[in-house]
Image (cartoon, rainbow over all chains, first blue to last red; front, side, top):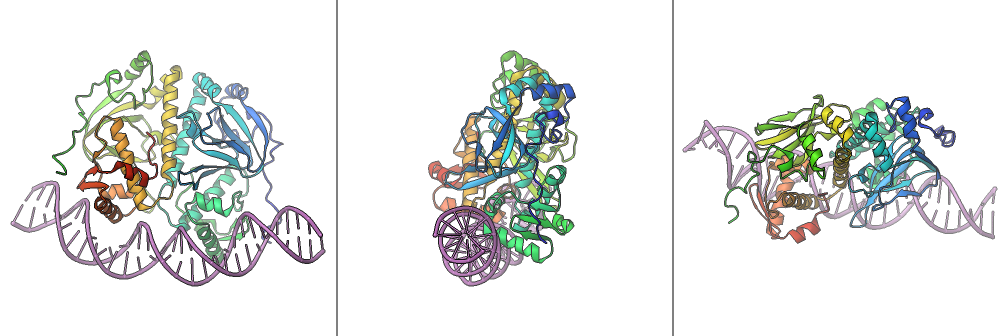
Length: 245
Length: 245
DNA sequence: CGCTATTTTGAGCCGCGTCAATACGGGTGG
DNA sequence: CCACCCGTATTGACGCGGCTCAAAATAGCG
């Protein structure tokens, strides 16, 4: 049995609407914030209801009004090069903040689109920075998140072989799922092969081939977008560190 | 005549020791800060004298004590992969801040080494964040710098051909030199071919070959580490945007 | 003037991209 | 329920860009 149906998704609409009770709080902006401070932050945050698959949170050039924290579902950020080619920058799981690269010029530098039905918390940028002026913990959180993203981006920058990239991606995703209390061996890829390949800077055919090879070698079991890690150890040794969590 | 001697370097020791009179202030952390605020920032900053070529500012794992702003000279940041291979993350010109990726875990995530005799301003991290708690402009500056670095990192992430990478690098460097009031056509590369190739994720031989090809095509003139841009237009059209300035 | 590190140039090979064909799956309408 | 269609994924054949290996040129330095 390769899949008995989709892995249990994040329960989008059962998530409480406050940071204090949100299971993602420790991954998200309020991480490590004292309770009282968290309440003040909450007051600024606007939850935003179901966002349909394919719907955009923002696009390149949009003025930065708010940062977005993923509550449920998956997002992809990408940009369109001068040549017209799409370039996937990242996939974003619940608890992660999107739009940080817009702070510099106050305009979004990439597009953000939902890969599945999703929901987010909207954090009005001005209000957040105003508040962080008063709450040292909040300022620290923001700097830390930015810095972390930077480190992640660095770790992605190396020149890796196709196998290293794919293995690294799987291991990293596994660890991100684990942190969120989900299965670390039974992964459901939210993205198409094309998006994944683009993100990894490979051709879709190459990703396909590597998946097949890994399956033959008993490293994983692939069924469409369900991937089971059979030998996480060996997989981890194959993939260079693409993870930061 | 390809070179009549080295291009005039930044006058390290003639630079005044205060942000208020530093020609790099507008590129650096105090960018856009009101005069009074700048004075308060200055009080925290410790200039650090001549740093010899090959000397390290910090290494992976060092606790984050301070961020460093380059005043004169050039730095390289890099890390050593698990496999032992070096990975160059970036080259840093005067006015740029180094060490931002250390904020997240409070430990430096990369090594920083001087490529030439250099000097820096040392910004004690705790003091900076404390002050930025009071000065909204300073907080904005820090967020902007981080965000900018992130955007730069994104723009580097694409999969480019060797020619695109080299051309992009030259164009980007040219623009960074121009901002600093130096020649935008007569570039002095501070780094070895090996470092440059590593940074661009190419083999040194490939960089060498691309340089030769560009020279044959009349795009540039190369003499050792002196590179003259002969046709910046065409060069820019070749190289995808690797710049953010 | 030799020694060594760096850079350039050449030859050959291999991983991955490209092109093309096939297989699969999910949705739609009869 | 099945036939059909179309987008996505897989598999195969082939070519090319850039890496590797090797050697020659050049520069830096004692």
